[in-house]
Image 1 (cartoon, rainbow, N blue to C red):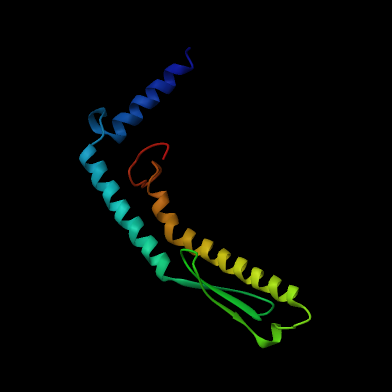
Image 2 (cartoon, rainbow, N blue to C red):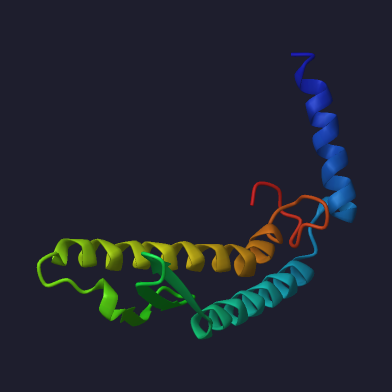
Length: 132
């Protein structure tokens, strides 16, 4: 049981340092949560407005998507069209879509990543709530 004592002391010290008086300032936490929600909505709107392009076959096929994942355009070069080999063209379209999706995922990570980090209790962590 002696092992549990230092853990309780650390836990109490953590609580005292994080929340003076041992209790969180609920009004401040609510205000921070509202600010983070506004930032999240703004980031989602920015993603929806942003377009990324993926390609395949040396740009024979390109796919354009919004940051929210909606396909807005597919462009196919005449050089990619062989009536006797539609399977290759289909593969190029799928590959271009995968490339565009990869670009969307990277964009989302750059745009949303800093907001997600603000929820945790780490250094400079937004709400200072451990475990989030």
